Amino acid sequence: MIEVENLSKRFGKTQAVAGLSFRVEPGTITGFLGPNGAGKSTTLRSILGLVHPDAGRAVVLGVPYRRLDRPLHRVGAVLEASEVHPGRTGRNHLRVLATAAGLPRSRVDEVLTLVELMAGGERRVKGYSLGMRQRLGLAAAMLGDPEVLVLDEPANGLDPAGIRWLRDLLRALAAQGRTILVSSHVLAEVAQTVDRVVIIHRGRLIQQASIAEVLAGAQGATRVRSPEAARLRELVAAEGVEVNDADGALLVDLPPERVGEIAAQHGVVLHELTVERATLEEVFLELTGGETTE
Amino acid sequence: MIDFVRAELMKIRTTRGWYVYLGLIVLLVGLGVSGDIGTADDPTRSSAEYQRGVVEGAGFALLLALILAITVVTTEFRHGTITPTLLTTPRREIVVFAKAIAAILVSIGFALLAFLTLAVVGSIWLAAVGADNQLADPEVLRAAEELLLAAPIWALAGIAVGVLVQSQVAALVGTLIWIFLAETIIVAILELLDVGGLADYLPFQALDAADGTNPDLLPYGTAVGVSLAWAFVLGAAGTERLRRRDIT
Image (cartoon, rainbow over all chains, first blue to last red; front, side, top):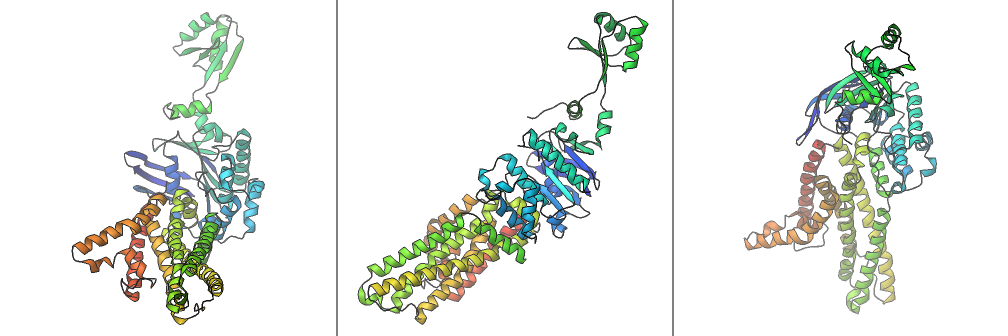
C-alpha cells in the first residue's frame, strides 16, 4: 500500500532520512513515530512526491505519487495545518481543491460536516484556531474519499476533546477499510488508535511492529511493598537482580511469582505485589535512546 | 486541464486582493482619463491622435496584470498553499501551465475593464467639454487592440518571473527595481559602449514596445516576438527550478 525502500534525504548538513525502509499494509492504521526532527515529515513528503529523495524510493498504491491519476481520489494527506491562504474562507479553500480534482461542490459540504466545521466554513482562515485548521486539513484530505490517508501530526493544536474526536474519526475511517499512516512524536496520542507502529530516530528505522509486540518487548518489573522492606531487599538482591526504591515500595526485576515465593519461604509479610508494566512512553523513550528534543 | 484552470481562477477570485485590483483599474484609469481630457487644450482633444494617447492610459492595467501574474505563483510559496496545490496536481509543469492560462484570461479581463472605464469616463468628459468623441476611430481602436494583445504577454512575463524567483517579496520588489532602475542603468551602459541598439532587446524595453505605445523601441511585431521569447526562456528555467524544488 505504502512502501518506503532505502529512502535517504539530506538537507545541507542534516541527514534527515538515512536508508529508511518500511511498509504500510492495506487496511491498517500505522503510527509513524519518532521524536521531533527524526525525519518523519521528510519521509511523508517523499511519499507524497513533494520532496525528491537522494536515494531510494517511496511508492503509494504501487506507483510514485506523481504517477497517480487523480491523486486526491486515491490518497488524502494532512501536512502542516498552516498551508492555507489566510484571506480565503475555509469553504473556498476546499472548493478550489475540489474544482482542481474535478469533484462536485456538494462534496465540500460533506467533508465540512464530517470534520464538524460547518459553522466555520464561511470565515476567513486567518481567524481559525489551530484546531480548526487541523479540521480543515482533514476535510481537504477527505475530499476525494481516498483509500489511503497520510497524516502528519494531526493531533498538534487539538485540545484533549479534539484528540479524542480525532481518534474516533480515525478509527471510523479505518473501520471502512482505509489505510492510514499517522505520524506523531507522542506515542500515547496514537497508541489507542493504531494497529502497528513504525518507530524512527535520526532518519533510521528503530522498530516496525504491532503495538502488542512493542509492549511485550518492554521489560516489566514487580512492585512489592512490605513492612520488612529492608529484609526483603536483601533476600531478593541475593538472587542477583536489580532492586530499586519507588515511593516506599521496591521495584524488583523478577516475575511476581518468584518474589512471592521468596517472601513465603522467609515468612516476610507483603502488603502489595503487582506487575509494573513499562508505559508506552517509557518504551518509546528507551527505543529512541531516551533523548527528547522538545 | 480545464479543471486546473478553473481552480486557478477561483484562487484569484476568492481573496480580497482581487477587488483591490479591479478597484485600482477603475479608479486609476478613470482618474487618468479625467486628468488627461480635463486639462488638454480645446482643438487638440477633439483629434483622434490625441484620443489614441488617452487610450494608451489603459496600459496601467498591463502593469497590474504583470503584478497579479507574479503573485499567482508566489502567493503559493508565501502561504504554503503550494503543498495542497501539488498534492492535487503533482505534475508541476501542469500547475505552471494552468496558472499561465488563468493569468492570461485575467489579464484580458483587466484590459477590457480598463477600456470600459476609458470609454465611459472618456465619453462623459468629451461630451462635457464639448469635444468630438473619436474613441471609435480606427486609429484609436488599433491602439486598444494592441494593448489588448499585449496583456497576455505581460501576464506570461509575470508567471515567468514568479515561477523563477518564487519568493513573493523578492519577485515583486525585484521586478519593480528592474523596470524602474536596473534596466535604465543597463540601457545607459549599453549606450556608453556604443551598442545602444541591443538595449531594445532587454525584457522590459521589449515588453514596453509590445503594447504598441512606444515607437522609439523595436517595431511592434519584433517586440512581441522578443517579449514572448523572454517569457518562455525565463518561464522554462523557472518551471525547471520548481520541478526540482523540495517542498518542505
